[in-house]
Image (cartoon, rainbow, N blue to C red):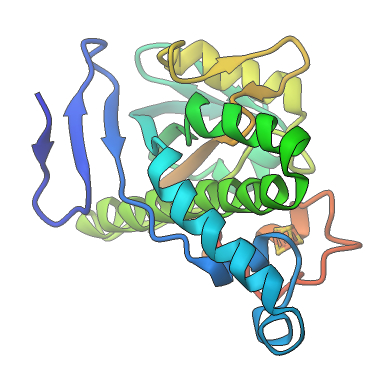
Length: 251
Ligand code: SF4
């Protein structure tokens, strides 16, 4: 049964797999967020390319109807950190250079997967053939939507950490520099075993639907704050937003 959790937007329920909590956060992606996720400056586009604004507005409307925002996560106590690896109570190990550098002091970790679902994915695929401009705009909606889900998870993680006077780390995802995609995905999927009707891991290390992401957030008094994820991002050399703050991260 779905319930409303005090102080938290959206619905949630406890999974039959007891270590998992399932969330259904609301999305607020608007036309400006669609344009931003396509690499465009909304102010410039609104002044010079009104037809692109109309497309982004249409994508925001249709995306809101098609997206099935879903976050599945587990909060795990850290058993110990040794040999550059975090060993978790109840089983599971997270290892990698980035895990060691950012989460060595974690007392708990939140492991999560977030997705917009298969329905919007299928529509994006169809539109890329029948109406590519709208398909690209809806793809932008999907990117912005996943960013928003991770931002939502970060706010929840901050709330949980603050209850113990701890800090929460930046969200760390497989594929960032220092946590190889395939290895990181295998570690997270191996522990979470997410609902396969929602999201699946492919042999490439990518997920289906594509508008999905996985993450780990460390909690503890020794977690360093003020870290910029841009330092670990593989596209930082070419990113126009580098250092200015990504929608789903804390800088
Ligand atoms: S803002 Fe930073 S983390 Fe986000 S894509 Fe750009 S370089 Fe990467």
